[in-house]
Length: 134
Image 1: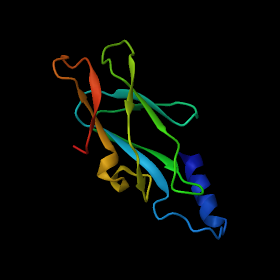
Image 2: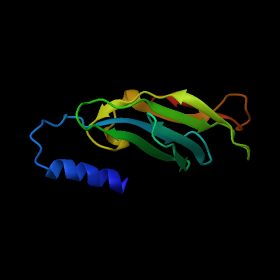
Image 3: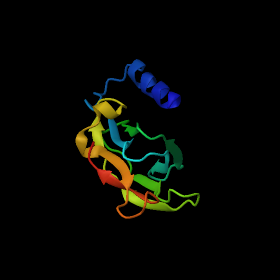
């Protein structure tokens, strides 16, 4: 994240005469407010390396792409470890992103917010992604 912030600072300080987009990021936000345990997920932008994340219960995390020349980002690929037992089972979910003015869940439009919740009837052993802030 520090490297991303340094890159953004470099763009601002460069004196580039090109107009910067009013919303310089493509983002999505994930909330873990419906489970009682940490969840594991991974994501990547286009063909870049996977970034693995563990998100504590009650926490939120943003995934943002910094626009360089145009308000356009590569595809956001997202996988969730849906098995809440000791076995890992990665499932792919489609996550839309939205233009954002900041790399922060509070700045991301509601259309790009997702939460993790238990699958009904799974006895809290399987989770999935649901759309919406709540």
